[in-house]
Length: 287
Image 1 (cartoon, rainbow, N blue to C red):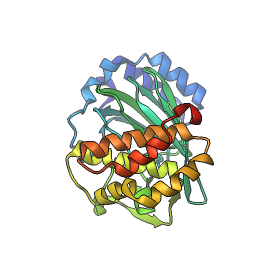
Image 2: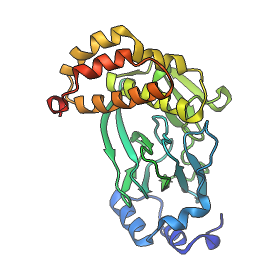
Image 3: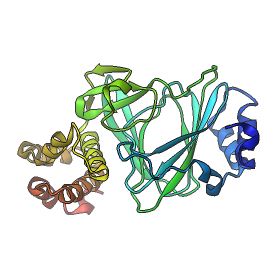
Image 4: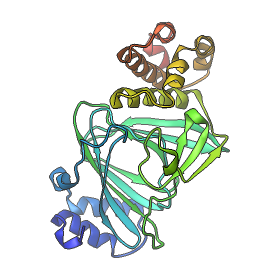
């Protein structure tokens, strides 16, 4: 879309972003605040009825020489896969509802969960090339967010060459579009094997997969793997010891509860996960 046809707030944003090629998080925060973007300004790009096999709605608003602006639409239970942002060196996300945000750390091809939070309406999140994260809508409301991705160099697609961390397949996938689950082979540009992850990241990944299959009303390539992960009796045996050694016990509890609900909705057995939850039902012990 041309700048002249954008709402005034977005035109103001574009004008500031075109004034230079690099921005600090503090500068971006001020620019976004001064632009005074409201949720209604994003309605022309809302896409809550996106195809179910796509994890969320994704619409391009504006492309500059070194940045792009997108609007994401989050229907009930919409989630991204775990990903980074390609060539993005600076950027920001402003949310207009209580989205969930999970950040990760990658060291020597080992992915671990760092932090999980619920963002507040109007909150702005800094984005850069080093950020590996996942976003989603745990609420029953439709939520919009605006995303800015930039780089000092001229690029036609700043988020091209994004890494999608496919924990279930133990591989990193390079993609140029949406970071969805169960991507077709022709959409994946490159695959790198050998990805490892900690237990909490595995649980979150397979829970998100179950959520995706339930929401999309399909049984995709990894459906059985996700179900079996939570029904494996050896998983139950190892879990208690691992939990005792981990300081993020409350996050385990939250994810396992979500997984149990989804297994029940999918008419799958919850016997193993019930046994685990019975052992850690004292939340105070892990908080």
